[in-house]
Length: 140
View (cartoon, rainbow, N blue to C red):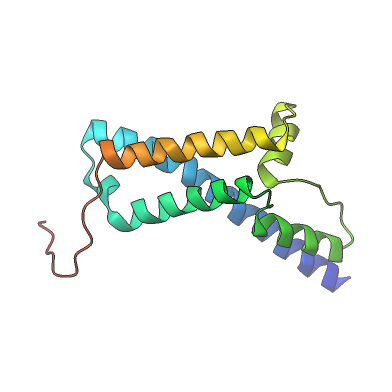
């Protein structure tokens, strides 16, 4: 019984990490746009921007190759070990269907991810990140 609880806890932690990642990708673009309009300098941070871009590119490539996110795979494996119910398909499609009662084929999500990735790439042009520099001193 203790093992099942541990597996469920780990699965829930992965679910939370996954949801946080999705929030980072979506909110990140919104903050970049708002940051441009409000002159927030932190939205030009090259580490933030690189991780943000890499995140959506990873998601986009997974959808192109018909792969399910490793976080979803690991979460479902943990839920199965705990004897809990598992869902099929991707994390996003499951929650979109559950929350919005909207069903779409996998290619639809690939298109959405690709368009979102294009918007993030466009944000690199419109709101240029600062250059990486180990010698740069920030003004306070």
